[in-house]
Length: 157
Image (cartoon, rainbow, N blue to C red; front, top):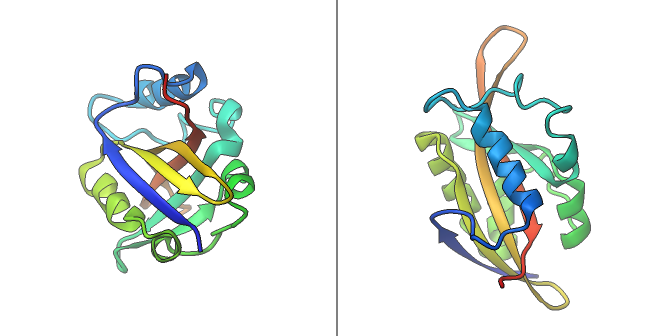
């Protein structure tokens, strides 16, 4: 079993890679005031540069849980594990993290959360984790709340 250490940070570090900053700014620019961005705006064309970095966690309000609808290929490659179709509670069990509780906060507050995540698989690595709330609608027009969860390798300056 791997072990992860996560530390919540108030904003992206100043020395973050330009690609990560551009991803966050794309999400931020899709907002309308304080509203959570819609997936119609944040579509595959807009997110093409980061599509392999994005996992989509869909909120299930009746269960107060999530299901992982898309598990980003880059995080699967880095961790060697896919959680597609699982609850993030399984990630918490496997890595000793607070992913589920943090996701609930993102849904409840409608605000992004950033973490520095230390992870030891073969060697100790540090990652930035961004949790960005988004919304979409189903075929019946009902709102669905989701969170884009992305991990980017990070080396502080």
